[in-house]
Every structure is written in structure tokens, then in C-alpha cells.
Length: 265
Image (tube, rainbow, N blue to C red):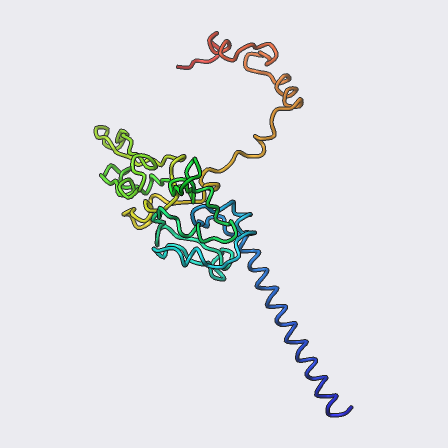
């Protein structure tokens, strides 16, 4: 074999090995990206973000929304963070959304991953940041100073939609039996998920935190959604109720209760 042929063979093998290593690395990176996409249920997106599946399909990781944010609220996820790399997110405890009226982050999005229409007024003529639903604040009353019987309304005061998204409700102090407590309560239909309340919370581990709405609200289990079918009817009909009263003989459960079957107040 000539020297030239040997050199060409070595170059070919070197290129092949480098290509294989690059493909392997690419596969690992892509595998990590896919895994991150599956493992990021608690990520909070900018105002107007479409559903997460659609968001990941539309977002081109351009970073324009991050650049447009005047408060440095948004950042691009980095590899290993558990969030799809390059996608925008924010952490309220570090820097919440200050609800810019002109919503520059959403306006700058070129692909519709951040949908201007979802943060527009009802007539569609102007932007309305109060329509944003970035997440939903939830209370941990075990960690809340107000629930201990002490006076604290930091989250309530920090809320930009005060007395709308967070209200204060009187509750009896069971510990003392004599005093009233003012407990913050999040109004699900109004909360924007901006996170200003979480940022303002005075305890070390915030007693009010913002979660994605689908996580905070949950959903009805499939076993309930299955609905009523003929087999359910058969099982109920053949079941034996107390005092050998069968379900098919009862007209109203309250009739059974009122006849003394159960003692209740």
C-alpha cells in the first residue's frame, strides 16, 4: 500500500470516528432534550404562552422575549436544568413578572408561541396583561405566618390585583379560641401567576408559590370521567343496602335517612 493510500485511509477513519463521536454526542444531547421536555411540569412561561405541547413545537429558542423584558424576569433554560434548553422561563422567587402593560415579551415573539390574542382585551382592540394566566398561586397555610395567628399580609399587599386576585378572609383562631385571623386567599379565576406574591412572602420557604395552572388545578381522574354504564347499574341494583333494603326498591336516599335508618344532624 502506498504512503498516500495509507494517509487517505487514516484520514477516512479519523473522519468516520469524529463523525460517530459527533453523532453520539448529538444523540445524547437530543435524548437529554427530550427527557427535559418530559420532566419539566413546573416551568412557568411568559405571558400569553400557549399550551406547553404547542409552545415547545412553536418556540424557536430565539431569545427575543428574554431580550425584550425590561426587568430581567425571563431567562433561557440551560442544559441540565430539567427544562427544554433555550426555552424562556421565570422563577418568581428570584424575579417575578411585573406585568408590563405593553407586554413586550409577548409582542416580540415571531412564531405565536406567545399568543398576543390571549392577553388582549375582550374587544381585541388593546393589550390587557391582566388576562395573562402564566400560573396560579397556591397557599401553604402550614407555613403561613397569618395562619399561625400573627399579622401578615405581605402577599396581599404585593398583589397588583389587590382584593381581586388575592383577598383577605376572616377565620377563627382555633389555637386561642378568641382571636380572628386574616388569611390570604387566592382567587383562581383572577390570578395572573405573576409571582409578585411569592417574591414578597416573608418566610424562608415561601408559603405562597406559583405553579402552572394545570398542575395547581389538577384534573378529574379517568376513573371518574369514564361515566355511568350498564355494568354500573347492575352492580348497584344487586348491592345489598343496610337492613336488606335493595337499591332498586329505594326512591330517594333521604327517605331511608328520614325513616330512622341513620341518625344524622
